[in-house]
Amino acid sequence: MRHSGMVRYVPPTIGDAVAPDHIRVIVGAASRLPASSGRIRTVPVSGPLIIDLADEAATAALGARLAAVARPRDVLLLHGDLGMGKTALARGFVTSAVPGTEEVPSPTFTLVQTYPSVLGPIWHFDLYRLKDPDEIWELGFEDALVDGILLIEWPDRLGGLAPRDRVDLTLSPGRTADTRQATLVAAGRSDWLDRVRS
Ligand SMILES: Nc1ncnc2c1ncn2[C@@H]1O[C@H](COP(=O)(O)OP(=O)(O)O)[C@@H](O)[C@H]1O
Ligand SMILES: [Mg+2]
Image 1 (cartoon, rainbow, N blue to C red):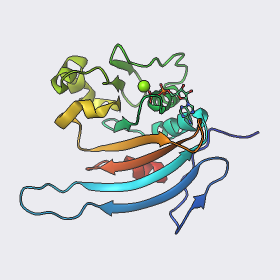
Image 2 (image 1 turned 135 degrees about the vertical axis):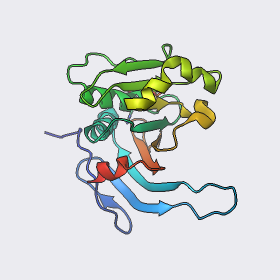
Image 3 (image 1 turned 45 degrees about the vertical axis):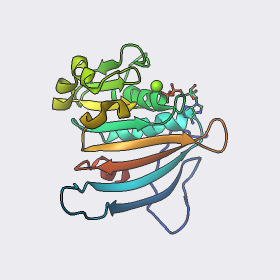
């Protein structure tokens, strides 16, 4: 059976490393932003990890892979245009972390949906309709930061309130209508990507 749910990390090589099935990891190297002086703050970053996603099932499988190694206070910022699959990835995450979850609706109108999990509560935000970053506090953001796992669509709406320790995951178009490319970068003290790789 063709197994569309596998996400496998292939150690970085020069050029392309081709994983079985349809998920291709191209690059994966630790890096650090250039050192700076004065008032400019340096933020350690790890990545990028680039993954080709052949179809929606592959996107959901990447969500499940992230969930398998998630811990309380992990933050995933989901970037990408409308229809790129941010909700599809979050859906894969939640259904994997909370077995038996029937529905994972897009929080387009509610702005947030929460799910209990053995790891602690999962908070799935869609901030497209947030008019001002400060409105986030009305959605339970303070509680979420204490012990939650945060999946945030349209994180640019947070302005300066976006957590510093997080993984930025950007979904971009692939070569055909049903393919996407995911680019993952860990920032601050987040070691989530290290857990994904191991
Ligand atoms: N590889 C893919 N990954 C994710 N979604 C895909 C993929 N290929 C096609 N799609 C379709 O794209 C749409 C993604 O929608 P959605 O997850 O709501 O996007 P977003 O939350 O980024 O606006 C769905 O209709 C889905 O079926
Ligand atoms: Mg969405």
